[in-house]
Length: 153
Image 1 (cartoon, rainbow, N blue to C red):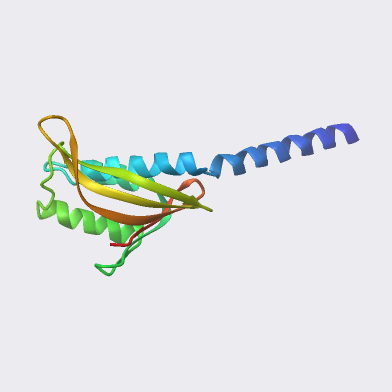
Image 2 (image 1 turned 90 degrees about the vertical axis):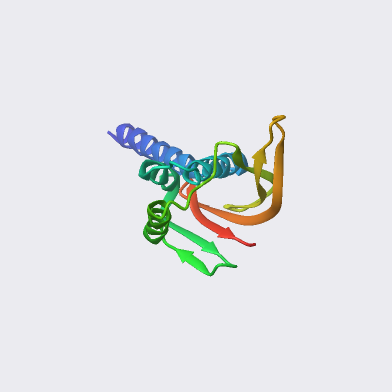
């Protein structure tokens, strides 16, 4: 009987350990998530974007995500951020095309955070991406998902 309990205990510990590791996100995973975030944000910013595009963007974030923009004094929860996106959608504020693209220029990984220098840009007729002003953002991660986006520009 003891052997069954020990084996059962070991299997439970392994399952718990695998769950913890599945929720961790190393620097490569973090960079992939930020790229996915920028890709989804580009899609939301396009003329003709939809409510589904907004929900797809927000699905990349933790339920307790905080979006902070220092310069604009924005401090959103997931729900207030969703409302802001929908207000802009209703006002037809999104006017970008598929030529507009955000790209990461540099990143520095820290514990559960990634500092990112990025730029908005436009793909030119020759196929080259022309960046605009560089920007800085800090991304935080909890349970393997984006939990903080702090714009520092």
